[in-house]
Image 1 (cartoon, helix red, strand yellow):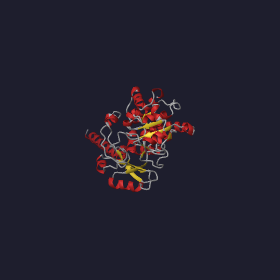
Image 2: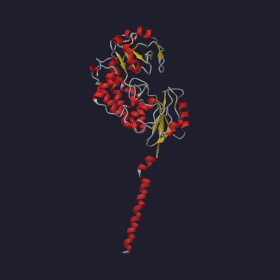
Image 3: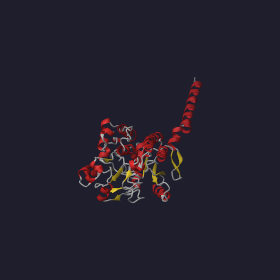
Image 4: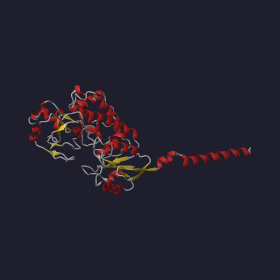
Length: 368
């Protein structure tokens, strides 16, 4: 009997030892949760980051927008506060992101607040080929200390955004969602590239992009802020103003706009849109006479610009429908809106809600 007891005790000891050894040395979850990996960022720096990234922040709105689209549960802070109207299209669980500022137009980033959000990594936007990129990234890394800073190419050009979206998906472990976003973008880019390439100059619609509550700031052709006009084959009437100015707006006069007499007007300013049809000066312009003024949908991000980035992906088919509704009857804008909001803004719209967003932008019901 005593011998049997000793054997049982010995077996139990062996099982315990084997179990502990397995947990300590063979468990893949231990390696994954504690480990790290090296990535080569988009400025050719080798950066050591956690093997599994759970918390991430970005230093500029375009990068934050991509992160919100592909990995909202891993995003830990935003660069600016959403308005109440914008929050109507943001799920409740994402309403209370801390606002940490950033380094872009406003240059109001707070290193302390960034660090307080406890990110695993920080995403820093760079201009492809920019001379100051490496020094800026080094400065960020110095200030953030042990928190890895990963440099990603600028995402403000909707035609070149794909590589950066793919890279960010790989870094944060959201490859499938990144591919889904690129697939959506490429679908409509291919469509507008095909149709716009067949437009003769004489058939191109003339367009004015009205900024500010008086509508008298604009951006010329080849501007990042007016890029969707160029993309879908519109003729920007301000293309002779300050060529090469691709970031800041240009002040123009009412007389200039009247002389250009655009056939279409696009704006991102609700205040301007609310009074343009009642203004006698603007009433002299064909776009106003013919009810061809359009307001970019606003929430949770503007579709046309501000920020310029992945939020403009849904603006590609919208701008195509604004300028050439007869050429894009194969685009069901209501379905495209519902798909984009569900997959990338993480909120499901009813048919009526999607329809109202589009009607409020000035699109005619027959063109949805």
